[in-house]
Length: 530
Ligand SMILES: [Ca+2]
Ligand SMILES: [Ca+2]
Ligand SMILES: [Ca+2]
Picture 1 (cartoon, rainbow, N blue to C red):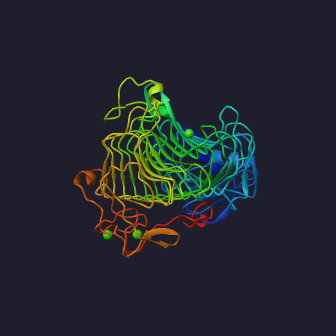
Picture 2 (picture 1 turned 90 degrees about the vertical axis):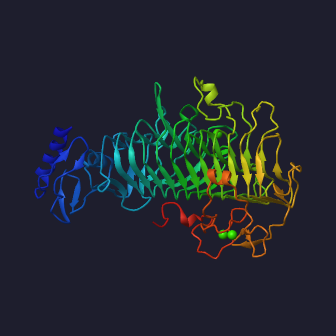
């Protein structure tokens, strides 16, 4: 490795005469010498490559695939490869293996003009065993190979940033994952401000596939997916067309600690699971879901947190859903849901009982892919309006014989003009406290007013949202309970305003500055603000 790096340096020295001698530690690929002292001059490295050196970075301009391939091969920490307008294709040009930038000097591959450097052809943009690489502003139209079925793959890589790219992969009729994140030691990747528009082929838009090697298995960890625009995923009755899938059943007991936040999902109709979480310890927060046929599902895994999301349906489109969960210790709070045409929040019954600690031994693949019983879900401070069904605990499905246990439903508002407010198809030990249910029917009419009261929440419409008015009986009326607070501490509201004498529902009545609201297209995607 060291020899290879030195050869590369020597080649660079031969052609770029002003570079001082530098050294690299092969173990960590850390830049340890002084940075080049030349400034802003143009040198010819290879016959057709242009290099601009400066104190902090080296810029390499490329305008075709073979130049791109060479530039990637020669890239070192701090190199920025700038792609001129044009089309880039070929498996080698799109193969980035064992390349490492550093946290302060990444290797950057970016379009000179956002969206006008086009990756094309039947190849995979494959980033393998690499770190600290930024891919910025490209248009992704390559379809992936038949055996790999992914347009872009981050494979065993960490600290890769994909930012401000436009994913517009044409339909081939084959299974195609637009972005797959997988492999051993995958972590800390940052997928931000991309546009994912118009998918009709089978397969998820983004899939976290993890890795399995004998008994060793793991999903990628600490990745962040934010400020992306997901839209127009074509309707499909089939399973497996999720917009984001975090994990698989086989790796579902591993912890992702992945954040999916500040994304806008519109008309993502490929699967009833728009976001399917199949791993543990992830957070899905502050996203806006608009008229998607499907919802946010904790399908496998434990301890996922779903909070501060906005869900809207037009009230006409069918199966526009909110949140549905399986498994242990999920937290659901500060979500705002309006016009949902199925269950807004569903703690479903399970077909498999994974036990109170959720880690039984000798699990079969069939066990892992089953619907696990819900233990201790906590559903607090959500607001659901004008939806078909509010909050449901349990199922009428006879094959789902394990009803949720140990869950709390507290301080929520459900206000529907028609349909069902709170629904309990199964008799469970769920604790209900301090909820408001107004305007329609309760299927669980036996609940007392301290559990669900039928007060008019006295909403006022502010910027299209049902928020508390000054005379709302929800103000300062959330029930506090030490058991509940041990599970979830709701410190702010759906607007990002601090909670003070907590109100019922997702909205705190407050004059404090708000930091969040439903996302608009201009907040996300390649042209989103920093
Ligand atoms: Ca699915
Ligand atoms: Ca208050
Ligand atoms: Ca508020």
